[in-house]
Length: 262
Ligand SMILES: [Fe+2]
Image 1 (cartoon, helix red, strand yellow):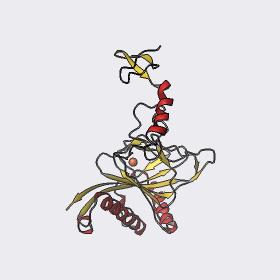
Image 2 (image 1 turned 180 degrees about the vertical axis):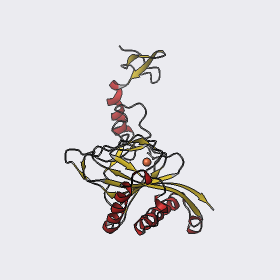
Image 3 (image 1 turned 120 degrees about the horizontal axis):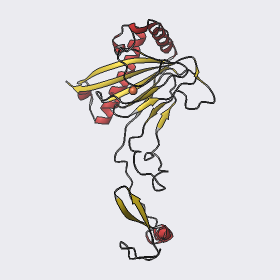
Image 4 (image 1 turned 45 degrees about the vertical axis):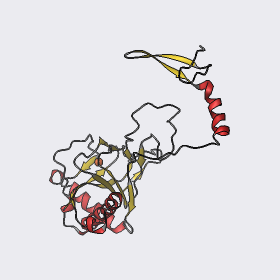
């Protein structure tokens, strides 16, 4: 159908009636004009590019504990011993959907006296302090006044184990440290991945935005954690652990931090 485009005055634009739930509305298709717009962009404007800025960005921080083999071995042996004690160290009030192939400890891990736990606590909280200071612009004097209220716990996940979508509403920063990745089946590329749900993807997708490049992409972000790796992220970001298909145990430590200035 040829008709006048009331916005541009150009002819040759088709209209497409779309039935919506609240009645009919019309949207105008500009496909016949795209060649004209492209020529204008190339010739008349000298391929001028509008300034593109990442206005709403979500900070994720990645770090690595060097020479982590011995501390990870100590953590693994400690956690497996505590898991074997059953309810003594298990989270008494599980909330997020999971299955029996995943063991979740109580949230007081960073209060344990073992040296391997103390080393992990120091690594996780010192790296988080650095991230918080950097991203908030705190100098050393102000960073020294930060007070961390922290929950920390461990997961042991065996074949078939998963942990459902959730976030951590009573904290500003969360983190996950990898003690052991387990041995993933080669035909299960998503096995045990920590998957973050893109908070900006819940809207209309078409050719105009489906293929946006970093940092504007709309897909989720999933990471296969490596031993010694620490991921820090805002606690409001929804995330999940994909089902683990492999041998051995996938062992992680998670933490939540509420942070105040003294
Ligand atoms: Fe979590």
